[in-house]
Length: 298
Image (cartoon, rainbow, N blue to C red; front, side, top):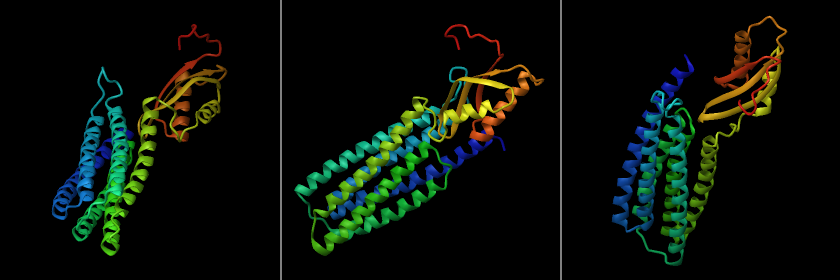
């Protein structure tokens, strides 16, 4: 199967998994709104707002997967892959905003705790947790990308919130200590924020066309230099078009002593890069030993 066919198949799986998780999250949202109104629990209603934000983020992720599978055009020669990264950046920013909101609300609830019906609170939180765990399992089984990782983190954050609400409800029922609820919520927010910051940093690296974290540029240069007939590698760049799709460009100078044609040498270099680093999208300029570059023109 070609790399392009594998990518299309992965996108199909991702779309199907996201659709199922969106349906699960929408069900959790309705359940928590109803449970919050019945129990008078601000924690459940706040978590419902959290879930609503995550449902919107998951819809954005689904849109990104759909758009990223569109073919390239003369105006957009790389297609729409970067929409996936832009969506990941927005999702990461949303997670950070959610974390700030949770901390703010946690401080308010610690200063002025609100009595709640812990039984309903725990029942709804337990149902939400089971549904969120099912969502995490679905997204973990899908082909992974930065966008899917963002979507999975949204669902994980919902699951953590459900655990926090469940434990807080249990302790409140046993001890009447209402201030545990905001303490648990603040801890959850810190975990969510730490993961979101990592995702935002990765998305920014892709947008800045930084060298992928799993590829060492010096190793790539040395690997190309080991191909017989290559005497110099320069102006080498490796970047990510989107998650898992690396691209390479560079100039390679040949000694001209061999009998192989430049086409044969080019294929050897491409095969080396593909076999060693998994990079299949390459643009390599072959130069003779006596070639002199024209000023700053590369």
